[in-house]
Amino acid sequence: MSDTAQDDEVLQQIEREVRMREGASKLLAACSQREQALEASKSLLTCNARVLALLSRLQRMRKARILQRAGHSPSEDLLPCTGKVALSDLRIPLMWKDSEYFKNKGELHRCAVFCLLQCGTEIHDTDLVMVDRTLTDICFEDTVTFYAVDPAFQLRVELYSSCAVEDFPQGSLGARRLSLLGSSLGGSSGKKIRAALESAGLCGAVSYGGDARPGAVSPPLSHDQSTPGPKFNLLAHTTLSIEHIQEGFKTHDFLLAATEDSPFWLPLYGNMCCRLVAQPLCMTQPVISGQLQVKAEEDFSDWGDVYGVLRGRTLLCYQGRGDPEREEKPLLLIPVRKDTVVCASEADPVHRIYVSTRTRGDDATYTLTAHTSEEARRWKEALWWHVRNMSHWKQCCDNLMKIETPSSRKSITLKQGSLYHEIVSDSAVTVE
Image (cartoon, rainbow, N blue to C red):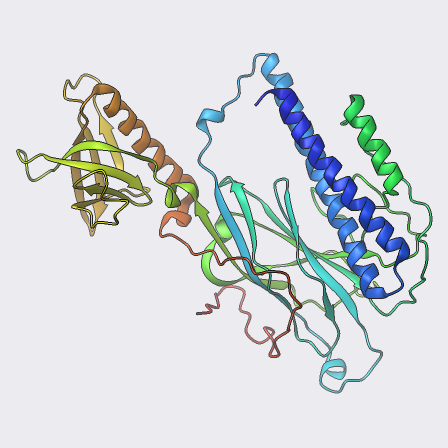
């Protein structure tokens, strides 16, 4: 894809977010019910985050081109494979005072909350959940899946809250102002987007409570605090990476970004629980396939002609080319793991490839040959890259993790029974 086409694609995505903002702004201005206003305000916050992410992506693309023209060649050929990362069953325990929860005393404190999840330029939001002292946990049933994620990903989870008992002024929300788009958008496309943003009344329904987040980038669109309508504030956040991926229901630290005197405050325990799994492409898609000759190390004379398919942790050896489609049982399974050693000699006229994997305390070595030197080269490079990809994805390649199919948006039914008594920071809670 040409540089211009890449820029146009990103600019079109920004324009799409701006149009969505425009619709949310009009809805927010006409809202007569708090629930509608909260949803519209959430949409504005999400669009703001997406615009910021897309602007950052545009800047990175242009910076990479400048470096390339200056003689710094890109290293795309060395990048590991991408994959899918999914977060589900997100639960955040609350820690109410005894007088509030057990005795139901004191002023009723009610907030609307949702989570914003960002991985690279891909951003998702959860459903809104209404929280008061009758609940012991905040539960989000959404399954959020991120695509084309590299193993060095950073998945940021942010919890936003808005006090739901404040007076709700109806009618128009007044004039908004655009504070910053910078000079990232240039030319006719930039003018078009800036004009669309101004006509949409870009308000940025984002305000940050508490201390500033370390290393955080301020939103590109500021919020006029005098603007009527519900405002969402950052209550807590955390960042997850590949080290946090593990099958089962796990506990993670949740860093507070607000203080107890904030009107949107909720008594968080300081942890969040979720399932975080990944499916690297090297575990789900065939890497290479073709005709091979194979023999085991202990059998020096018996070569077998097979049709090989490298997928996941195994080189599957079938009798014929059509066997994989017919789901026939393979003749031989050659293990390929993160610690597999692949060796080949350029001077070898037979173009042998040695694949050695330690299994049950012993080294199992297989020798592969192809019909041509070009085929042998393709298999050698594919095996090397496959082992390298699995090394980058670490424990995600120990087995194929299951990603639940995301369910359609629906109202949240909160479970009673708190995680408060279940959480042990250094241990895991597994849900069957």
